[in-house]
Amino acid sequence: MLSVDKIYRRERNKILAWIRSRISDPEEAEDLLQESFLVAVTELDSSGSIEYLLAYVYAVLRNKVGDWYRKKKTGRYLGTRLENEFLSENSLSYEGIGPERQFYRNLMLEELSLAIEELPADQKTAFVANVIEGKTFREISEETGIPEGTLSARKSSARNFLEKRLKELKSLFLEEY
Image 1 (cartoon, one colour):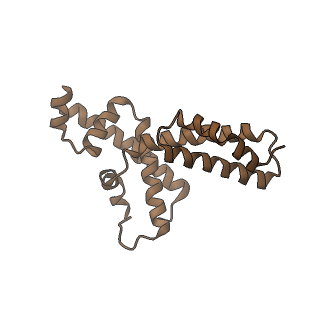
Image 2 (cartoon, one colour):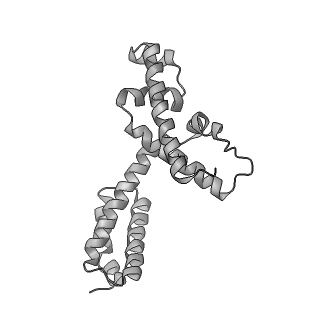
Image 3 (cartoon, helix red, strand yellow):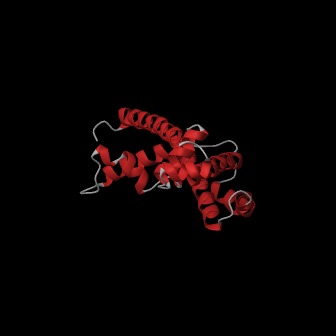
């Protein structure tokens, strides 16, 4: 079996080309390459051996590329408006925020961003336009032709779903906060 170092040197350009065919940002591609080999090295150290190391590296890469796309897709929802909508009421003010609270806050925002992607399209559109983009129901109604009351109901349904998701996460991991 070849060492990770030898595989890295021999296969680096080919693997990097594979990543670049999926992700155009050269810095992100290089980071994913290095992260994937780091995971392989860590796994190799913990288990002692990996039978098909190059195949394992590609499997890690596929997961990393998928994670990158998910994060990019949901990252557009992160921000002050989403925080104000959900986290301001959870007594997580920025005053004296330590690393644990910051981690909790970030975890909540990431989970909310992922949950927004799960909303039905009509609810997602109403919620994102109103909360994330800051549009009024009147503005959204004028753009879409959907009555304001319908938009309000859709946003309310979306908010209920997201609050439930947030509550589930808090009960699983973070009751102390």
